[in-house]
Length: 152
Image (cartoon, rainbow, N blue to C red; front, side, top):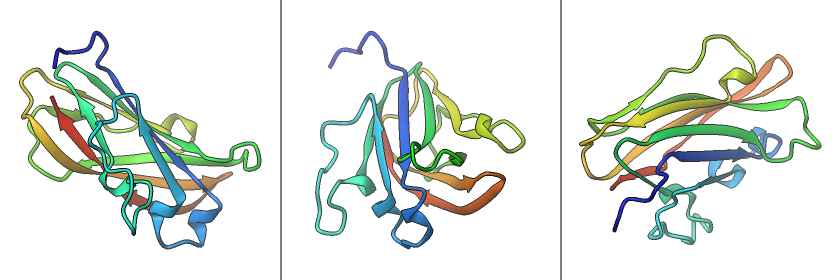
């Protein structure tokens, strides 16, 4: 497959900030999407009807990656926010670099960035998105999900 003209990746993590406070199954309370979703991402299983636990994003060498947290129902919860606090690669994925978030609380930490170096190891790697949900000046809770990246 030829390399597309634009390969930068935006991964959006939408969180139901009300439901996640009382539901221990984080996958019930999030929706994840990207502009480069792998077509082989499973769409349904009995325990994960929307394929979120096996969500795969295609990435290419020399690409920029941004992980962004967003409140699913911001119109009714305008003081809520989602902070992407950490991205942890589960395997030794040489060639994918994640930049630390900005220091301090607030909306400036709703996202994290990274890049894929030329010559990064091909294949699928799992990783963890660690995120916090807050309301006003209070952090409501810390959570994580484990999607995948596929190097092309």
